[in-house]
Amino acid sequence: MKIVTLVKQVPDTETKIKLKADASGIDEEGIKWVMNPYDEFAVEEALRIKEKLGAGEVVVLSLGPERAIESIRTALAMGADRAIHLKEDALLNGDALSTAKALAAALKKEGFDLLIGGRQAVDDDWASVPSMVAQLLGIPQVSMVSKVEIADNKVKAWRDIEGGAKLVIEAPMPALVNATKGINEPRYASLPGIMKAKKKEVKIWGVGDLGLAADEVGSNGAKVKASSWSLPPVRQAGTVVKDGEPIDKVKKLVDWMKNVAKVI
View 1: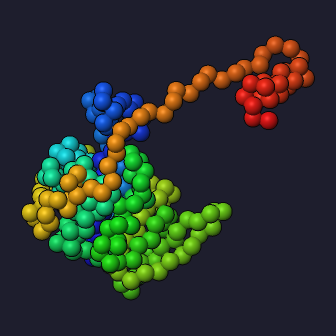
View 2: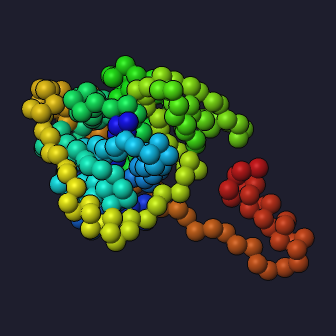
View 3: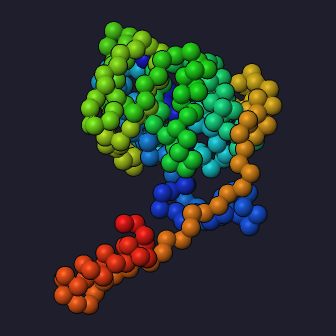
């Protein structure tokens, strides 16, 4: 069985984000880049499925600039067998659809039995690329998956729904599942794994390798573009009621909520 995992490199969630002077995007200077946390769940689940079956191959697919190789190597150090890096400039800075087109073209060329991705990327939070990839490939997709089983050339997925309930969905393979938090606990890359990752194959593909035109992908193929970026307003300091007896503090707090905050 060939399992392909979709991996995206994103800013570390603890990184302080700054904007460019012209508000045209994020100032990338000083940013620490990491594998998207939800994609870590996807890689771990792919490895567990392979280990349970006792055979197969886990391939990492990532679209990104040169620096994305760091996250690709992390997945390889965890235990993935090899990787494909889509990194030509013409493929970068696209919207969800142009990105999905590039990934779908790579997947058609590579072939796969099961496709696993994270539920969403924590940088833009669109959570739409996997769905578009599945649509372009014409395969079933299950999102928000917290458990997966493979048997009889079918994928059985437990999907989280409102109220803490689970929806169990069965689909024929090939299929795509989007892993969410709780599906597993990603392993740490061991030192031997890190050393082996340096020698594992990473194919580099561009637009020509995908059989696509330059105006279909990347920024040239994007239908949606951000006109400007802005940071959320600075959170104001809280109000603390200190003096007086408890009943007096309550009265002051209620008065503040009513006449200042105007929430009651």
